[in-house]
Length: 107
Image (cartoon, rainbow, N blue to C red; front, side):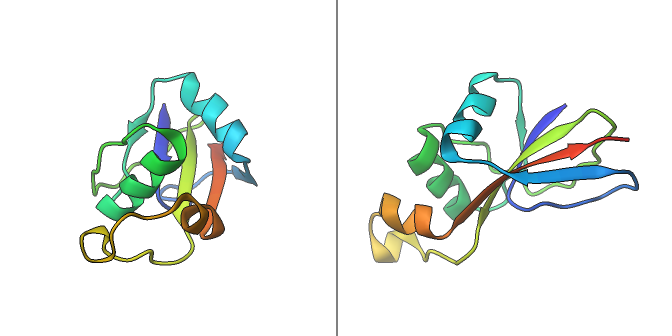
């Protein structure tokens, strides 16, 4: 299974690998399709859409990764504020406050 998460969370015992990705590497991962989003916040979904041009589903639910599963982690390192009050979030602000990684459950 392939997931999109807003944090690198380990919800079941096992061996994991985590590495940072560039925006281009993350786009390649997304282009392969077949992922399930558990992005929990509208603001994070807004930022994700700014970067990738794709709006992920917003779902606040836990997952349990199994061996072979992987997750694209799209983590804002700073709260970007309420778009309705602040207006448009600029790409520079998103990229300056973003970590993208790949979390893989090995066993």
